[in-house]
Every structure is written in C-alpha cells, then in structure tokens.
Image (tube, rainbow, N blue to C red; front, top):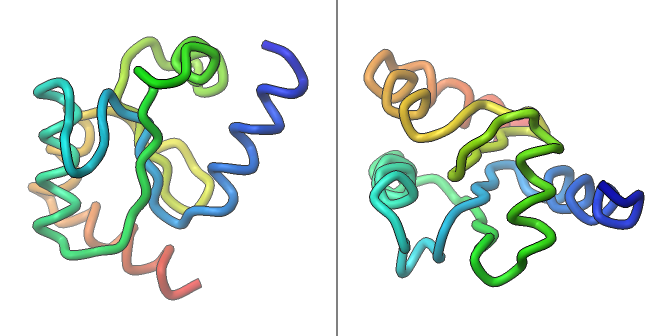
Length: 107
C-alpha cells in the first residue's frame, strides 16, 4: 500500500465516528452483506458514513490490507476496525454494537 493511500484511509477513518467501507452506498447497497450492515445501522438510527469501494479500486484493494481483513464490508467505529457483516450481526444481536456506537458518538 502506498503511503498516500494509507493517509487517505487514515483520514476517512479518523474523520468519521461510524464508517463503513462497502459495495455501493447507504442509499443503494450493491451486495447483501453491505445491505445487512446498512439495515443494522439504520435500525440503530445513528449517523454514519459510507465509502463505496466499487467506485475506487485503490480503496477497494487497500482497505483489505489496511485492516488485514479480506472481505467487504468493513465497519470502523471511533477509528477502530470492528469487522464485517457477520460480526456486525452478532454485535447487534448482543446489544454490544449499540453501546459501541453510543460511546463513539458521545466522545
């Protein structure tokens, strides 16, 4: 990964309390896993931003290296990598995701 790309991803992750790197956008997810994450965050009713990896090949490849996680979507809360769709579902069902988001938004 180039230093420039790492800096771009760092900036995105740091500037957004809740950020999802996904296929498509929150208004039009382009895969089922990305849609799952959007539905969960919409249900929580929290502000979040998305980055469409389909629109930026560098980010699409770079984010996998950045997080050391092979799949998309990827969720970041308060600058920390949380995981993908399956982890989001587990955290949502246990109530942990709500707490993580509330803490991030309060800070």
